[in-house]
Length: 396
Ligand SMILES: *Cc1c(COP(=O)(O)O)cnc(C)c1O
View 1 (tube, rainbow, N blue to C red):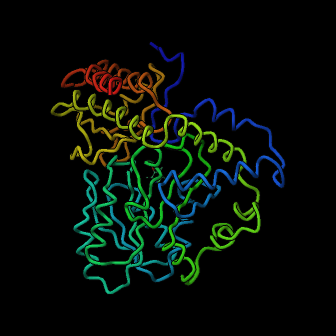
View 2: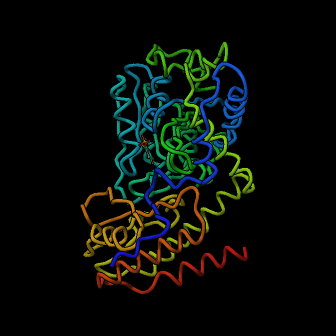
View 3: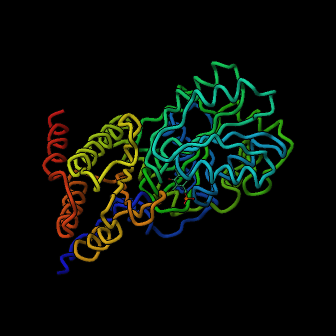
C-alpha cells in the first residue's frame, strides 16, 4: 500500500533538504549586479565564510560543485611534477587525487580499507622517507561513501612529528556545518566544501578556504590555475566583479547568506554541531539495535570514527535495494544508495543539514517498517533506542 502522501523525506547524503527561508531566498528576483544591495550581501557573505571553517584565512567562492572546489584548490597550489599523497578511507580523497594527477602531479595513495579511518602513522613513516618532493597531503574529513570521520588534527600531528612542510588539504564537503571542524587550530592549509550538504543550499557553489601558507604556495607555484579558477584576481579584487570572476551566482549567494543566518540563529556552529551529534547518535543507536548476524551492521567498525553527517549501513543477507524501494514507494522516504563494494548490500542515511527529531525519528521508524515488512533478521527495534538518545538530547 502506498502511504507516501505528505512531506517527502529525502535522507540522502546531499543534496540535502532546503529550509523554507533558503527556498524563499532562491526565488528572489534578479537584482542589479553593479550596484545596490547584492554587492553588500555578497561582500558580507565572503567576509562571513572564514568563520564557518574556523579560520582567519581567505575564502573563495566558485560557481560549481564540490568537484569545482577540488579543482580550484589543486590548480592554485600544485605544480606539474609535485608529489601528492592521498589518504584513502573511502572514495572521495582518491577521486580528488585523480584531479591532482590530471594537473600533472605524481600521485601516491596510502591505501585504506573503506571500513576504518586513515592511519596517521603510515603517513608519518612515508613522509619521514621523503626527499622534499611531497608537496601536499589530501584527505577527506568525512568520506561520504564509507561514512568514516577522520581525525584531521592527528594527521597534522603526524606531519609535524617528522617536520614535513607539505600542505594539508582537507575535503569537508560532507562535514562542514555538521561536524566540529577547526581549520586553523588543526593546522589545515586548504579546506574545500560545497553548498549542498551541511550548508543547506542547492548544489552550485564550490567553496575553498586557504591560509597564508597556501597563498604563498599559490604565488610561488609554476602555474596551473587560469582564468575563472585563478586566485590572483580574486585575492586583490578591483571590485565585486573580480571576487566572483564575473557575474556572481546570485540565487546561491542569497541562499547561502540566509543559510548562514539560520546557523547563527541556532546559536552558532557549536550548537549546530551539537544537534548533529545528538541526531547522529540516535541513528547509530537504531543501527546498533537492528544489528544481527547475517543482517545489519555498521560499515565503520570503530565507533570513534563514525561520522555525524552520514551513516553507511551494511545489510548482510538483506537486499538493501529492496529496503530502499519499500521506503520510497510505500513510505515517502528516500535513503541513500550504498557506494561501497558489495552492490545491493548497503545503504546510507544522510543526516546533515536542516534536520530535527521528527525528521530523523521518522526516517528511522520508516526504515524499520520496511525491514520488518521484508522479514529481515533484526536484533531488535531501533526506534526506542533512537528515541532514548533524542530524549537525552532534550534534557542535555
Ligand atoms: C559530495 C561529496 C563530494 C562531491 O561533491 P560534488 O558536489 O558532487 O562535486 C566530494 N567529497 C565529499 C566528501 C562529498 O561528500
